[in-house]
Each structure stands twice: as structure tokens, then as C-alpha cells.
Length: 508
Image 1 (spheres, one colour):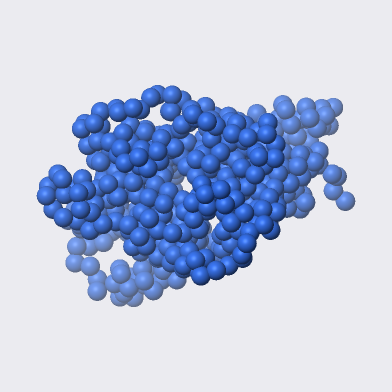
Image 2: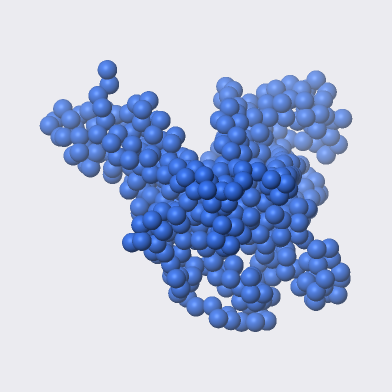
């Protein structure tokens, strides 16, 4: 029988904290006048439609780009990989904000060049924006599957006379369906939990209506809507848990060397994605900065974002260490880890609704930075747990055993052996939490102390007030910070590839 790990009591406490929002929502929803009505049916239809269209759009965009970045020998390959994955690091509400301002009658495009453009709002506009900012989920998961495939089957198919397209369709695509499904489910989860995009583009989804009910002091109805949303989130999480990754014997991956013309055409085909997802927001923000200047922006907003994110990152790492150690030491620890992951599946608007009630009951916490940081930690704790656990699992257990044989206690062995060797995972986890907190909007809107503005909430305030030009600096700061974080994430990536030269007259 395995010895009870000292990390278990701490992991149990953290798991119970992770369960608290759901318990609070159930308690609040008991006072809701009705469980479901015709209005809820419209909200449910909009939410499901947005989720499905987002997932479909992400697959349509992400799979070809995964093939492009995996198999085609591109000039400055790492640059293109980071550029095409960059929308993942940009909050979708920034895209929604700039699309809303740029398109439609009186939009920035019409003012600049006099060309009328369609309005981007409702289900269609929200789906397009969401697909543009979630396709990297599909691209990266499919790319990981592609790079793990052995190219020998494609070589054999080409030798037997199949064209390149036919061999990719018949040989490669069936082997990456799990990767496609995993990426599509991540995109669907993002669509379910996102608040900013449907709110800005005027689509009544669960997240938007929860915020409306909260602002109308309908806390019990907001809790009921939150629980209904969590049922859908739970279903998606269950489906995601059943999708298994592609497992094959490792081999050399495929690499194609098209001519310069074909390479240029491929990059040209990918350019609309870069244009709309990255260049358009940057162009709109730069235009506003040039035209309106800094406006009422104060550096204190950036400072508020930074130190709140720093506190949350430090707290998340402190909470994550016992959970990660418990998960390594046994089945019960893995159960507490899974429970702690619940917060990552809870949309920020739902987390904020639950913790508002906690703040009302514990007046010492109400509208304090401590409650806001707690919300951040509960939401993004799994990011820190995952990186710390993966780093700790790779450590040689004989080092700890040797320290114990030499007389070190468990605490001393952890402090002098495990902790220093896990520092890389700790820093990576803290950096991921820091980035996500910098971008978090709905929980910050609901829980932030009085007169406490962050970059994200300042963007929301100027949108509500209609002073779009004042969004230039915070928008640019969020894009730059996110872009730097993504570049660091991809730095040092290595893979082995085998070259396959494609002749100009391809085999048909």
C-alpha cells in the first residue's frame, strides 16, 4: 500500500475551493423563478450555433495551415509559424472591437476609402471573428499530429502513382482525425466561454445574458443561466476526454520543396487570415492613435493589469505545487488534480457571478483585489499545474531517494532537490497564468475593486461609451504583450524532417 503523500491535504483543500463556484451557483439558482423558458431557448440556439460554426470555421482554416506549416519548406519557416499562430494570443474581443468599428455604414473603412462594407454583428459576424481567433487551436493540434506521422506511407502512395493531393487526402487525413477533433473541441470550448465577442457584436448567448442579468441585479437568474451553460461545457469536456491522440511508431516527417511560384501562391492564399486577424486590428489601433492620440489613457491601467497578473501568477504557482505533487504520487492525487481543472472549464463570467455572492457574504472580501486574484487563480490554476507536473514527472526519482537515504526529510528533499529542478516548469506556468490574466475581461469586469481599471476593462469602458479612439494604446499593448509571449513559447522548437522534392510537373 502506497504511503499517504504530505501533499494530499493541501490538494484536497484546493480541490474543494475549485468546487465552490458550482456549489454557490446551485444555491443561488434555487431562488430563480423558472428553470427554462422560450427566451432561454433562443439563447441556447444562439450559443450552440455559435459553437458549431466556430468549430467548423476553425477546422476549415486550421487544417490547411497545419499542412502548410508542417510539410512545406517555407522561407523563414519559424516566422510564418509564429505569425499564423499569433491570433491565438490575441483576445478575440480585440478582434470583435476592431471589426465592429471598421465595417458597416460609417465604419473606419468607409470613412477612409469610401467603400461601403457589410455590418459585422450577430451570429454571422461573431462566428467569423471567433473562427479567426480559434483556428490556431486546430492548426497546432493537427500540426502536432502531422509531425508525428511517418512519411513512408505517403512515399509509397506517391511511388504507386497517386498525386500529392490524393495521397494527403487518402493517407494523411484519416490518420489525423483525432487531432482535428481535439482542436475543434478546443475552439468550441472557447466559443462557449467567450463573453467579449458576442457582447460587442450583439449576439444573445449565455455569457452575454448572464452579464445583463447580473447588471440588472438578477443574481439568481444569472446563476441559473450559468448552470445551464456549465451543462454544455461539461458535455464538451466529456467528449474532449474521450478523444485520444494519434499514436504511431515515430518516424521522419514529410517535407515538400515546391517551387518559388507555388510557395508564393500558398502564402498568398494564407494572407487573408493574417490580414483580418492581425493586420486589421493593428491598423485600426494605429489609425486611432494617429488621429486621436493617447486620449484619457493613463499608465496606471497597465500597472494595474501587470501587478494583478503578477499576484495571480505567484498565487497560482503556490497552489499548483501541492496539486502537481499529489497527482504524481497516486490515483487519489490525480483525482484532486482533475477536480482543480474544473475552474478552467468555468467561463470567466460564470466564475465572477459565483464569487460576487461569496463577496457579499464575506464583506471583508467584497470588491477587493484579493477576491479578484482568487478568481484568476481558480480560472487559470490548471495552466500552472500542467506545466509543473510535466516538468516534475521528468525528474529522476533516484535523486530524491538518494537524498532520503542520506537522512533528508521529505520537506528538505523537496526544497533542495525537487523544487530547484522544477523551476523551469514553475516559471513557464507562472508566465502562462500572467498572460491569461492580462487578457481576462468578464471576471475582471464583475469583481474588480472600485476605480480599478485594467487594460481589458478600459477597452470595454471605451467601447460602451463609444469613444473608440481611446482604445488605441491599451489595444496595442495587449497585442504586443500577447505576441511576445507567443514568440517565447515557440522559441527553441525542434523537429526532425525528411526531405521530399516535388518536381514542378507534379504527378497526377
